[in-house]
Amino acid sequence: MFIALEGGDGVGKSTQISLLREWLEAKGRRVTFCREPGSTGLGEKVRELLLFQREIGICRMSELLLFMTARAQVVNEVIRPALDRGDAVIADRFLLSSIVYQGYGGELDVEEIRHLGKIASGGILPDLNLILDLPLEAAKTRRKGTPDRLESEADAFHERVREGFLTEARLYPEQNIVISADQPIDAVQQAIRSAVRSILKQP
Ligand code: TYD
Image 1 (spheres, rainbow, N blue to C red):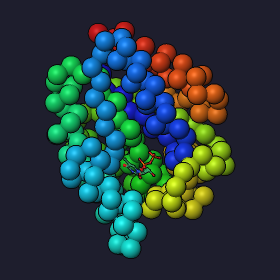
Image 2 (image 1 turned 180 degrees about the horizontal axis):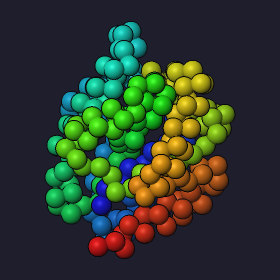
Image 3 (image 1 turned 30 degrees about the vertical axis):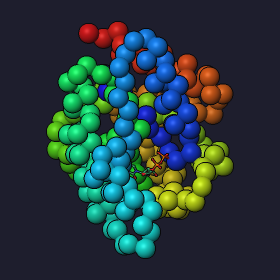
């Protein structure tokens, strides 16, 4: 089982991921967690370059390809072996983030990104994307620390990102579930667990 937590910046993914992980482990599942970009030596270097080395120019296409590079590596080193062992894999972001941030937000071609994403991940895609949705103003007040490269994009970019997640969920309701993050932590977690329960039941 492969689940990705998705959503805009500041929607509270980390808290929800910890709670989901605890719940799955309490049910006796082995859980492998990874974040994107990151979770491998190469991925963490790419993360640093993409998010924090703001003095280095990165055009939108290079940005996309760097996210894809990190993804190819994490699939190879972490996700595929974990799925082969029978672990539940929880990813903090996966391909949907590229589709939405570099596609809807950055205005690259969405279908090309989808295609490239399948190549980069060797066809391994989440069974379910859980999309935490929050209005932009609320998300902005929840963000912490110095804004990284993507967080520093204009509000219009982040509005397109939010709309992008909702559009993708409408287009592909089987793989994407939208959960309002504008409710107490417990209520969000209950919604996440009930979505995960539905795929745990599948053979
Ligand atoms: P991160 O610190 O993980 O942000 P968050 O805690 O909000 O998930 O930084 C990841 C940033 O990179 C985030 O702004 C989303 C962006 N991103 C993309 O633009 N494309 C991608 O493919 C991925 C995986 C992330």
